[in-house]
Length: 243
Image (cartoon, rainbow, N blue to C red; front, side, top):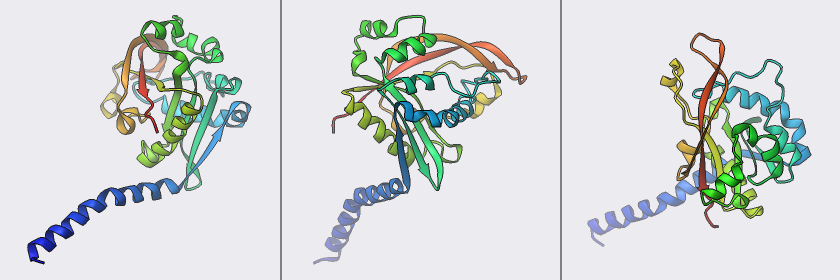
């Protein structure tokens, strides 16, 4: 065998090994992550933790949300407890919560009567039907968060996202829906904007529904006080790939 042929053979095997090495490294990273899932009333003991996380993360730009001083439960989490089509996933790493997600069937009556009516003065089910989407085939992800020290860590995100997809398939869903604040309020923190959810940085390949809604909430101003400000929320969809 010539020297050139041996070099080519070795190079071929090195290139061929790259996907398997990457897969092994990814599997190893996932193996250090412990997943816990909770449904319906089993979510109740988590409500304080969920509130702490959502307040911390949605205080970031562009949401800049300032909660009521007496808020101990995030409003949307009540719907998770009262629905049979909901789940909360916690991802733990090194003994602490590193990521979480909360999701519910988009056509859940509880979701629309207790929470999504707050996000829109329109009947969202009717609006989605008008846009050509089938609400009964959609899973709504209320929030998908990672701890600051593991911000949008791919292994953590994918471990949680696997649970979202499994739940969606269990419920016969073909699409995943989420909301992003696409407004750009004037604030110095805009220069250091972070993605508090991993849709853009890690997951990708989603589409806009073309539906936006304007909603006002107490927003942190440059001067450090809360002021009612309007935000533009846009609904996005991601197709659930087949196994």
